[in-house]
Length: 83
Image 1 (cartoon, rainbow, N blue to C red):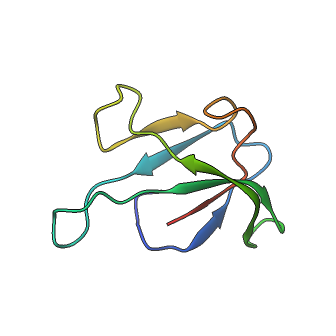
Image 2: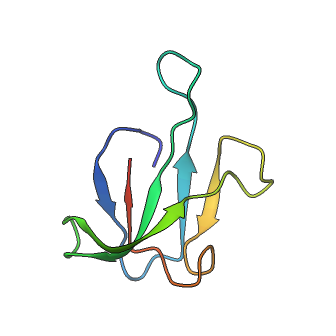
């Protein structure tokens, strides 16, 4: 998800990894986050369930973007993210 400010974004049940761009706000000084959720109302719907936390940074733990394995970042699969 290269664009921030999309609101709730559901993740297809067949997807195993998602590319996230964290970047910074337009002011350039506050890191954007994607909040991960354990549920969704359906594809194209809204986030539901438990807020699992923030999607981590890139695979190196430092970069602002990267492909994230949504199956094992938290103890349960990420089904929806909110920006």
